[in-house]
Length: 423
Image (tube, rainbow, N blue to C red; front, side, top):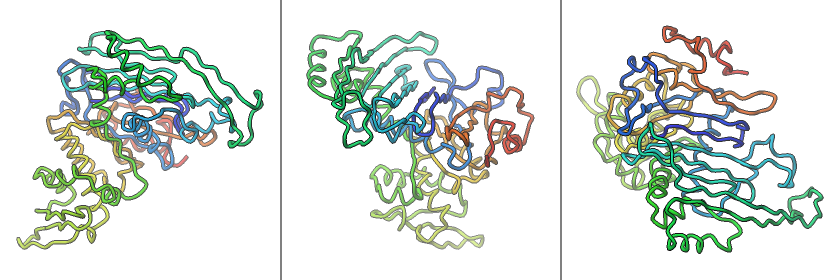
């Protein structure tokens, strides 16, 4: 499960962002006994969270930062910060030497019954600046180093004799870098194999993935979590179309699971059965409903409402949370999760025993509800109209807001909570 996530200098976020799924240590937890899980090794971890923000405020960029970090583990190729991913206010020209391209990502997790991991990564346009992994068995223990790698020396050379290039095509900057790595129990055979993988390469991928390939237990555990448990979902099109394009076998297995129907029926209780289409399940499947007189009728999914079609796809992700212990970040679910359906989904996720987490972004302020969420489960994203920089903060940052307050959205609309839907 995800405990904490930090990053900085990514797209609209310039300053450090901090997001936490740790439950509060106060007595308020007694009001929400289903909203968190107690990890076997200690620590109370939240199951759900909602992130509210205005349109174009940075909600999608927040989820994309997780996609961006995850891609380094999936592709295992050369690693460097790309100019398009760096905050625009840190881009001062075409020459990479004068830009602040260093990006930071830090993520803390509890992995099954193995223990806790804290992973830190800094990269710039040349590659890794610093990378480290720490581990502890119990929540109250102190972290111990698994490995630390850092760039000890970096010499930049420019054929333009230190004159900043005005055109990207004229950039002839070269670099010579040297890394140091410190690892506990770095056996000679593993060290030799590792050096063979990274030597004579102008750019190297993540150190942790290479250690995982060499069989290091902690590197394997964390890499597995990043690749298989973390599910940041962003898309520029309707989610049902997105799922159709991917057409993954894993999704079809979930759609065939009878437990999926229970999740899908939350949008319409008249739905009693799904007849799946093997080749095009997200468009050609038949949705069977029962009328008040007991008779049934069917409709092809592509002919159903847009909300039903999209929820048919999103319900797969909710299934992954509850029955596969995935950590799903669902971006822009406003077309699907109205406040009523949201309450059903959140209650369903909270009411099941599992180790998954469901975090979704929305601009619908009616989701701001302290009957279903602790303050630590509600986050805001706001963008400054002058700097165009986004910031993220929690409702827990406002101690004056009490749980007896029923209409949080009114405070938000008035700007009392630091930002409004329309700036």
